[in-house]
Amino acid sequence: MPSFKQTFWKVWYQYITNRIGNDPVTFLNYGYWPPEGETLSLQTEDESNRPAIQLYHHVASGAYLMDKDVLEVSCGHGGGASFVKRYHLPIDKDIADAGFQIKSKSDITDHVLHALKITSKRHRELIHGFTPKILYPFMETFAAIEGSGVYNSFVNRERIYFSYCLMKT
Image 1 (cartoon, rainbow, N blue to C red):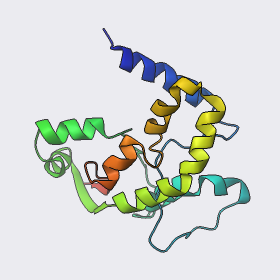
Image 2 (spheres, rainbow, N blue to C red; image 1 turned 90 degrees about the vertical axis):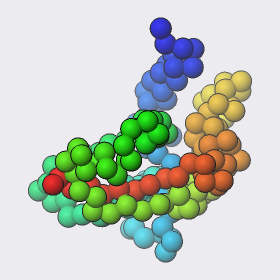
Image 3 (cartoon, rainbow, N blue to C red; image 1 turned 120 degrees about the vertical axis):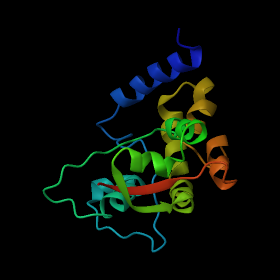
Image 4 (cartoon, helix red, strand yellow; image 1 turned 180 degrees about the horizontal axis):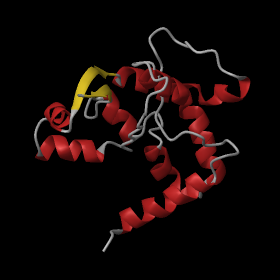
């Protein structure tokens, strides 16, 4: 039987994703801010999502993708990856055993934190605009708003955000 927490997040996730489409939430990632700053020329309507788009750009620019099959694997808060790393073989070995070669691996935690700083005000306003007040703390944690437990866990390096570029072997 699912726990209350699992049921709550399942229902809440459905609620949020059903609102996607007319902005306010188009991407569900923490974003990325490269060391050189704004590197993409975006259309005006995409500017509010710049940090999230820059995360996709960071990942997609790691390889030539034209005429390739591409799989995007999103891991939410990384719980699955954490489980595999803690209870199974080292994660890089698991990747190799699954038939992939690591083309590149980098710690992008600082860049994700920079993006979170930039988006925290906007995300807090969105949360306060369509969430019951009693849920503000939970949603601010979910969105990793500056000062939240998730945000601070990146600052304290309890959580590390890795970027991998993998290729079939």
